[in-house]
Length: 289
Picture 1: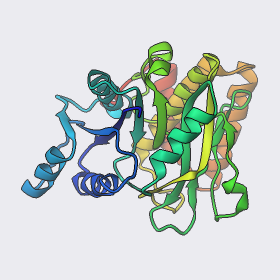
Picture 2: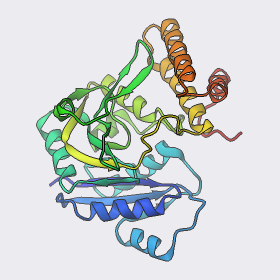
Picture 3: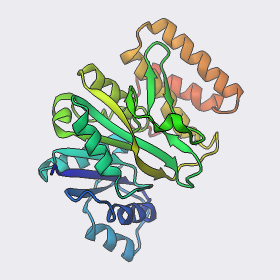
Picture 4: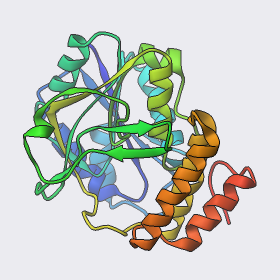
């Protein structure tokens, strides 16, 4: 049985991490190790929380906040040292069905040349689907995630062009060929970027509808902070710079798309403008100002 390194990146979310670990303790797949990367959290866990985490995972605390990509890269390296032939990137604010990993591994073995497998991700309240795979359009620069009210269409597994970093099963051999997550993004778009790198390396991305987890993300629109919007705008522009097929058209389309989101209240003008300025000033990595 292939050994899987399940990576949880924690930043001040000890309660969520403990709940996720308790969920993972109930899974059917037996050949796995959980790696918790504490991304230099500023909050102090309770004695019970840190004891539980240490007893149910390989616990590693970084010296500084490395972002989503950097934290996961630390976990991947630890998984490699622990003889894992697969890594599973899993958000720490999730819970899982007992067979979720069996289903992912079965899909991986069934569909050859697959670089990433993801599954069906419900909102934590289980009322609707947050992600059932997605796509990245290199002509428009827009990443779309499939989801919404549960229906039969989300029960159909198949190949996709985007898988969220919330749930990614990746063979170690793919990481050895494609490389680690790009830390220049720090937050957001690193999963989209990795998916495109996997595709460009001639691997497939597969959505497995029978692998189910639950994610504690707000179902409301407009819940992002200004800093989150700034990161997303900057990093989306870097994605276009890297992957856009017809760059002038792609930039124009993306700015029009973003303008519509501002008018609809889904984005806000100030962080979008600052993120655009960051891009034009070639700012990468963690935003410190």
